[in-house]
Image 1 (cartoon, rainbow, N blue to C red):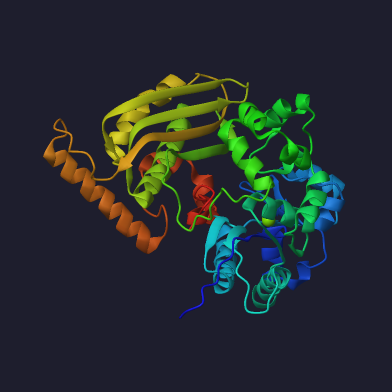
Image 2: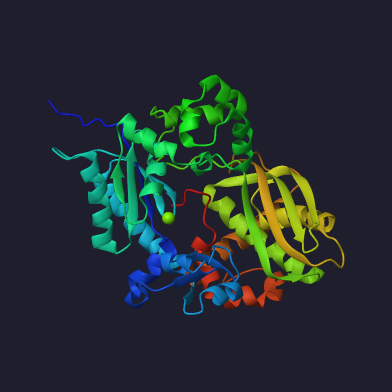
Length: 413
Ligand SMILES: [Mg+2]
């Protein structure tokens, strides 16, 4: 007879200031110093060490403001490829110590907490934290509890370099009493504002509130959190990613522009990234939206339904062009563009478009295949549409050649 280990405890593992810690792994000089990691165009601090935080620097702050607050800081440019390497190593260690691990984000995992013989959950939390530190050199905090929601609250409370298992109700309530509801993932400003008039401001208030009232205020999502806060695990650990409803690509231009040729170049660039994403997930899109934000605060959008869902460059560009025209405000400086694909369906699910001549289809498919093969071999975007030649800056930055720049949703494999 085989003994089955059963455990309903859930662990949450979260790296401490991950990007900074990752830089410190390969450069020990950065340890114990104020370090800031800079984003996209080198203009913003996207991660900071505790030392830099103590100087008052905030995430998202422009570099010139950070320099005033922390002139002795060391500022390094992000390297997502390296962070991805370490993230995967962390995942390997987590999988050694747990049969079920959910890769929630690049530096955050949930896992099923299963103790070895004679081991307590507290010892397990310590073991995972210490093994990742010894093997990889990244400091992480581990929280173990009866549910995901509780585990995350515990690891947040135990940061940095903490390891804490909280299972009994008394200890749980002590933890919940001291934390505002906004610390729960899924309860941001709007939901919190609905709770406040009822005197629900801390996590413990929410746990002790009437379940039906929570449901009426926050729908089924809120009710699920209520169960979780009271120790009933209703949110599962997902070891496989869920299917997407929407895929999108885009972002800031770095430097704003009113030039149609540059906007068109961004449209093509974002479409190439979006198609990469559609192909990665094996889906086609039936509806395309182009959204543009302007420096003046204005926004423009255009949307098109496709006659037949597609992931083909020529057909999607044909649909995206009129969307761009609709979203375009002539003469106004634009700062961001997003391309959004909706009505996704599995590739091959639909019959071919009868109005798409076979010759054209064969040619488009041959070009797509060639593009994919060249880029697989010689680097991402090595072969790309000539329309994007108006964007020399992004192709000069080698960091853009890495897949990880386009982090895939919350769960990325
Ligand atoms: Mg983290």
